[in-house]
Length: 161
Image 1 (cartoon, helix red, strand yellow):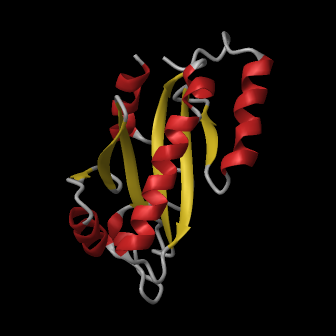
Image 2 (cartoon, helix red, strand yellow; image 1 turned 180 degrees about the vertical axis):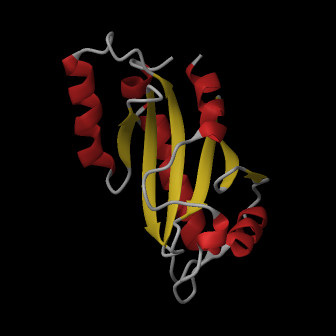
């Protein structure tokens, strides 16, 4: 059930500052634009799918299929990695469960969990500087992010469906 919740990543809602591709005006030196990001992801062996904001890729960790949205900020200075961890019944999650999830942020930073109260969804989010981006750096960041999705599953999986 949790794995299928990850497939909902196509409907990710982004934090302020991440916007439509047309707004990417100030890409830093060595940074990616939408076309370069797509090409780099393809070169790394992913098959990116276009979303209303950014690109969706998938990766495997054991039996888990992970979906990650890659999206450039409106000014092109940042690259966000996002994963929809699933729906949450806000009234059913205990304070201890929220505390456990929040405590994980200290272990996985700069990745962090956040809650979209309106959509009742938990997301995992990582922000990267979009400068001097190489395939090796991007792959390392994607690997770290996907490893963090898997390593924290026990905690986020206990509150999502």
